[in-house]
Image 1: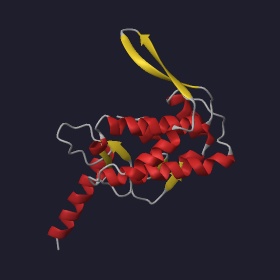
Image 2: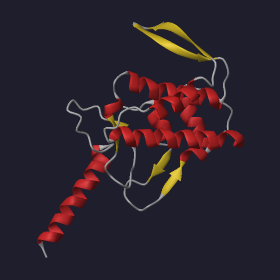
Image 3: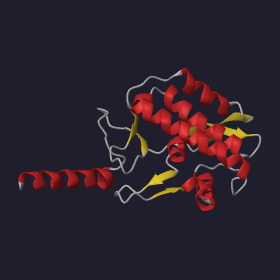
Length: 184
């Protein structure tokens, strides 16, 4: 279950297989365009150089908050202040719309800047907390991956971002390690 804020936080990609390779997708104009399109946001492309540092810093804050919350920490004043700083940086209005049989509230920015994008990322994180899902935030237990995700299992036992990739890789590694120790 991807959320806007987790997609943004995971723009710092690590090779989950363990070769140590990582890429900062946020620095890539192609990723920026795909991100905006995926979430139906608009901002100038590529990210203006003077705004990139703000984006990188906020992503680091989100990742730090996710790590803290994944270790059963409570929401802190620092978290709320950091998110609130981003929420107030963009003028936006909300509008109610009906699409098919679904009624939803739509965010309508009054400007199309990266500040408004960060404001929506912050709102996504805030909504996760407001929905009582802060205790479902996890960091993939594959130390090579470090992906941020929400645990959507009923018993809150999900340990890996993807059971077929990271989960299976770690299971195979544990199996091989066990076989090595048994053969000694």
